[in-house]
Image (cartoon, rainbow, N blue to C red; front, side, top):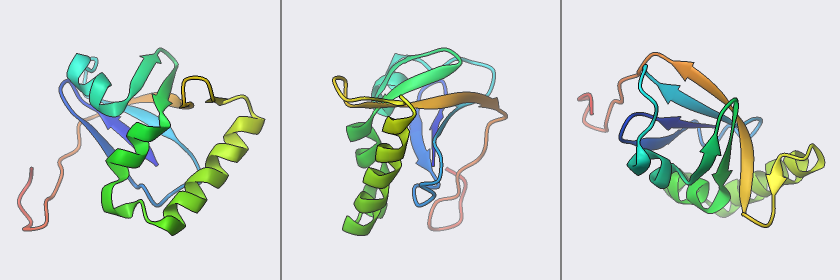
Length: 111
């Protein structure tokens, strides 16, 4: 699962891949306040702390009861590694920078 942040947006990519978590910065600009707030990012550097409730919200319809079980298992594993802050309700993800990607919406047009 990847939290993708642009200058002014946040979206969750591959929500069904609960084998890892990364925060991806798209393009050369750092995410603005709107993107950070939408993504539930509490702060970032080489790693970012991201609110788990924001990840659930961004997962949208993928967040079924089965998904929630897998997400809880992912958080349990991350907790054993010190990557969960239960006080803040956040999980840590490695930050990567990539070239921007286009999003294809249901009708096939780029977003």
